[in-house]
Image 1 (cartoon, one colour):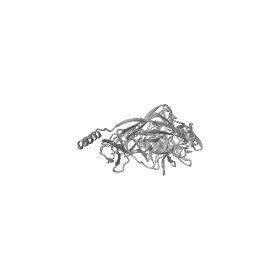
Image 2: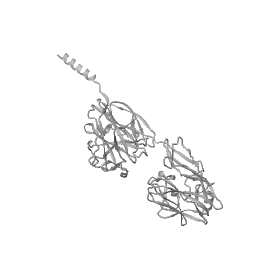
Image 3: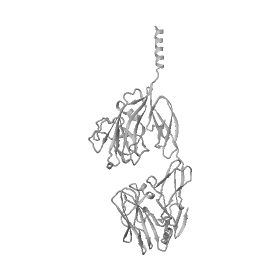
Image 4: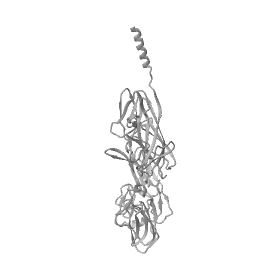
Amino acid sequence: MKKIYFMALASLLCAATNVRAEEGTTSVPVKMTYVNMDEPSQSYGEIAEGEVAKSGFNKIVSSGRGDVVDFGNTGWGVNYITYLQVNASAIKGNIKSATLTFEASGSTDSKRTTGWGVGYNSSTWSSTMTYDTATRGIIILGDVKWTTTKSAETFEEFSFDIAEALKKADRGIATILVYETAAAGGYIKNPKVEVEWTTDATYDITFTETNGIAATVTMDGKDVTKGISLADGTYSYTATATGYQDYKGEFTVAGANLNVEFTMSPKASWNYTVKNNVNDEVKTGTCLEGLSATVPYSRYILASDGTVWMKDATNKEYNYTFTPDVDNYETTLEYSATEITDGIYFVEGEDIKGMTVATGSNANIRCSNSAGGFAEEAVEVYTLKPGTYVVRMGVWGNGGETFTVKAGEETVCTAATQGWWFEEVGTEFTLTAETTLTFEGATSSRPLDYILITGTVNGGGSAVNAVEAANAEGKWYNLQGVQIAAPTQAGLYIHNGKKVIVK
């Protein structure tokens, strides 16, 4: 009898030992709708496969109650938030990963790329939800991802890890919010979710950088910064952080939760020098090894012979971006000579005495040298000798402001802001006596970009000669004729009527 009993027990133990854990990847149901702040009681129903949901110019606002999806600028009229329901209730075992994939467009005005992000909250999704009934709180999952297309007609595929949301959701049914972060709005379609699961026991894995650096941790291309659940085994990971060397490591899960600690090393600091192909003026700075650097540049350079050289905006910005590949890196900004050969004086708006530097309202990218200038009252620009001249000025800012340049009491150039950058060319005027030019009209949000004066001085005289004539008081000027307090970096300057090299 005992023999039969032990044989039966042995058979059960053998059967138990041979039971293998199951694992797999399963596509789970996803539903989609959106809400609209401008029609707060309107329901848009469930969006069918192949059709688009709208997302607006969203931003995440932090408050004492957590993060909330808000709007970057309600005046764009694209005040939408997209909601998904992801139903993983049929998944058996433990969720190892869950990947949300959807197609996203460029901006609805087809003028810019769009950034897409996802998060979740504890609200219950419904096809009849409205802006008034929807919960807009959000726990963000991962970083924003950007399209390369600007077209609202073109879609690109994006993927996000939403395992955290499904693991914390009631019965495995999660409400996911999709938000869009660029001006105008965008469209999404065809959301899909695949869940990787296992019936093996899994354990919670977290990651800690020992110096407190906010690093991003990935495994096989998936963002696991906030942690991941894994079965027993050995795994590799990569940690990245701005300003630090990438860290690659391994860890082993052995029947228990695990906190993986790692220490990152800072990148080296590299020096760079930016020259131009017109004169010896340089800009110097430092950046971290392997990262790009950006320096602003002027639209115009006025050469000593009166030739006006120009470098147009790069993607609408007067910023030059480059990536040094060695320490003490040197690069050159290439300017092209224009047909203007009678330049007299050039000055950036922010460098005019009495003007205040303006960098807000996108002046820091749209204006020449990444800044403009403004003053509450009229300011003196430059004193011209008798001769015949034309004034050009760069203008930036929303409509509603008129800029005026006067030669004495005569208006020689006016420009009204239009909401975009442009250059205004005034009418030709003749002076019979030495006359001071004045400027007025700019504000902090509608700044003057620059003033360029061309023409002929009676009796001749180049741009640099004009500066030297006004230089008797020992003031400093750069080669563009701009008065400065004192040199702050290496380059060629004019002081007491002579060229001086500052090293």
